[in-house]
Image 1: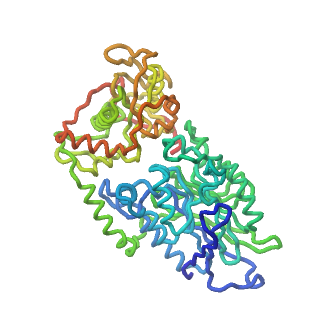
Image 2: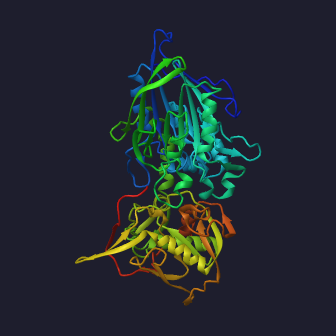
Image 3: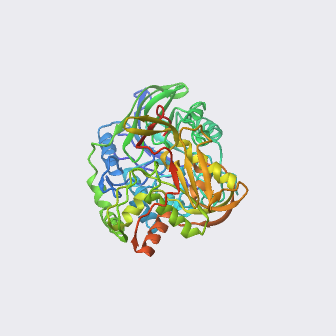
Length: 560
């Protein structure tokens, strides 16, 4: 198929005037010649900055990348004689050193958005991680893109109108395709208010009903595709119904295809109440392909058949031209990651950090306490795959692998009883004990994400996984005495926790004492630089009893 030609008929920033993308077919036959029309939809989501097929933190090849997507998409376009439309459902500009060093630290063009523009994406829904660095970097990436950032339910509080274009209309041969973008409305549950200042987030289904009606009516669309940065409800997590809306969206009349994201699930296309629903995993490891056949009738083009699958990019060779385009930037990022920030006198291993106090998490606690002056610190091991650090140099690469999210710091004020509630919430992961001849294994609740298993520094306590939820934490001691439920203490938490991330009680509503809007990874690097030589130590302020030799899920797989 010839390359798609994009014709922008109206300014993208005018909310009720739409970008029209024209996909050129080899010829434009009359309706009599072409009673049926085929259209192929391609879709990615949650790319998280994975431009190149290499993981710079563990220094190994990556299964997926936009360079692989480029090869796969080009092959489909070249082997297809009908329109091929390529979309994404967000979470693009956060997640790898290549993206964050270039776009955030150095203020350069987003390599992810540049790669997507080169590949020929037609639209992207705005994801929650687009807000991680505030509206400045988000708007900069939007300006750089050759395609619109869509979101119908992110509302400008000053105007009451969508803060991003809500939709676009694509003409694929003779078929008018309406493409609606939606964003999970739980962004305020994860971000500090400064990162979404002047915006509010509407329920996704309400916005979908309003705008789908417009696409079907005034815009005369034959086919409606929704790019939704959200997953399917049903995980059982405390925030699930706030962030995942897929099943409710599928119930909105007039939607033909619902392309989801956010939960990083590999969900091959399936029918949900007549709506085609799919999700392509994360980090460009899959591309959803949906082939549609439409038939023309008195009321326009109607879908009569379809086939869909999620295509793996694991064995797809990277596009060499796209690799060359980012080779220079990649070399600069590698040099930055190789920077030595300190030396360590002992090995640091994260393998047992959820089973016993460990030096890696204690480093995060020490950094948070030093940076804030708080009395207590709440933190977790974010990535259980953080590589073992051998005695010797500590590089910026290891620091980034230890703290992989773009969180900043907030100090909140809590009563002693509220601190106990926070610790009990973190202990939900510990869900029983199974003992045998080789020792005891703690059973874990698979519905609790590993990054939500927090520990606290500045006091001591024990955890007994044999007890029912809400009664697992015991013997909380502060300064040598049982913690007074009425005692007020300052607690350093990351910005995700302070916004309510993970469903922790009290943190989102607590009084805020101080905010440090800097990357915690940066603060850890500075902490190590000041120390020069780091001697890893464990203060063993919390313990799991009895001592266990391992862990395993307590029941069947839950939500991601």
